[in-house]
Length: 511
Image (cartoon, rainbow, N blue to C red; front, side, top):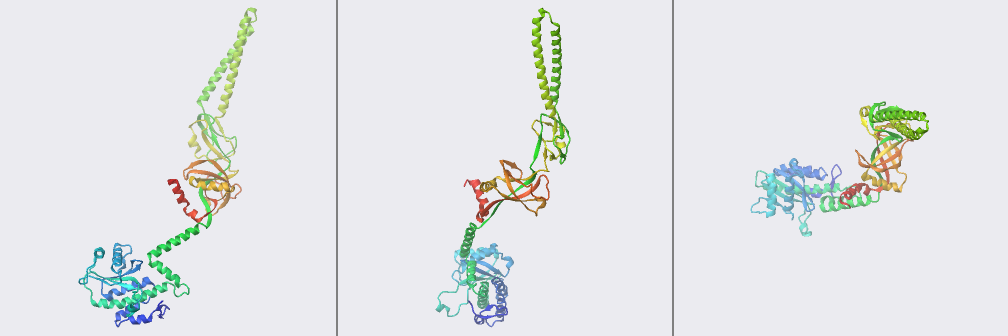
């Protein structure tokens, strides 16, 4: 860690290095004062490129921070034109990464200097979008290099970045620029080192090693990837042991438990509807009347046959009374047999008339229970309409009796519920009426439907029912929509996060 004095904010500045680096130039002194006023690395880089541009009399200055084996644009004097994801920034980062792998300065054009083919292509790609004429790439080290350092330690200081100086209208650089650049970069090196130490929490005892680790991860792409993978693996491993409640969300309706549909007893035509929607009816009350022309015709035909047969029977009886001579006795036996046949036919017609009368009674539709008519627009839907036997006409629900929730669980979620229901007989449910959203109620599953149904909202679904008769609900309106959550025990966070994705794979690839 660098040692030195402290400014008015208590931040560390290496006084020896600063005093050794400062030249007699007033511009350099002003630059030094500006760059050491912040301990934010990004702010230091931004001040450096803005203050160096007039000092070096150039058109644009960029500072690129080293990230692993590459470089990334960190600050530019015309920041609006150097967005991090722009093509110009990408080309510049590639060129700088290839230009200073050994830590030496690159100035182009510069006399007889010829760039390698690969480096020349990278520079041409960059100049195609930036329209530059001269470029100077100066490496920035982690610390200033002392004159005798090369003799003591052969290894050079670590390259932490690069300063790029550009001219757009000239192809030669003033020698004064190179003389000013060296002390300016020394100040930049010191300021960046102090800022990074501050960002590593060096002022808090015991946190310096963590700051070094975080800084290394931030600056090295490989370390960042490894740290990210380790963190992700730790999170996934922890998620397999942490248990959280597993809930299945579904929707449904609040309905009376007792309800009956009214069906047509015979084929006919609705000629009268005596009730409207939401009207209260009593058991046995007439709610509609039908008319059957075939039934009327059958009654008329059977009544005519009965009249004819009765007249024939009366005539046969009169003949038997008049035939009392011995000669007529043989004929009288035949007449007696014919009379018996007529009596049998008359009895059959009577039975047929009884059946027809019973069918005629079915033309009068009565309420099967006391309750409320829930069929909407009953008169518009039924009046003067032909109906068939067994066809549903109206529905009656008993609002004064028990109530239940009818919940539809989508087919892809019903397996989780059925699996838990096999282990636990009592499955708790939390629900709330959509008309009273803030208030929630608790109940239990009472029964399951024995078949799947198709609903417009959930498609193929499994129906479950919950008794809510004992709950004090704020409202009991037939068909009130509810939102419910069925408690299915506890599952790991790993299951909660990825079970839907795994089920998707199972449905499409038979895993």
